[in-house]
Image (cartoon, rainbow, N blue to C red; front, side, top):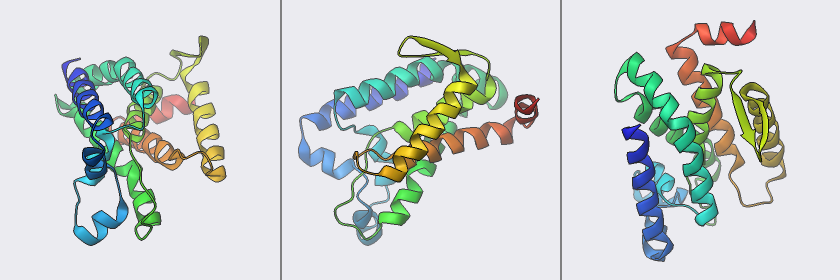
Length: 194
């Protein structure tokens, strides 16, 4: 659980600092023109360390806390201590690339938050244990049902694109988490389909 706690601690510290320092926040968010024109490639990672507000930060870190520990234990046994960081950072980058490409010339587009990386961890856990119980607003449901509802909601909201949330990052992060686990343990896909 130590890697999970390090990821949470780092994200909370940087987010809290950015809440009180607008300049720092602007240097860390994903702003595609800065990546494209000024080669500020760190923004493809640093955007995941800053959040829009306390609730955004809380929900992402709360979810990471509950699913990160489970995935850290599993991945550490399978591929070593770097397993969770590979899943998390891979999800962070994979989830933002489509938005970056779509908005690379848009000076008004910004994205921030670890939601794509957290979705990668969450969906890796869903594939690992599709029958596990997940509570959504205190309502218990199988992880697989939650996953389907999450994808449907994110897809629908991405098409609406009127709430200032990067639902595309949620979808791509979830997809990365599923692909990561499917490549690592192909039998999980077969087990899910039966």
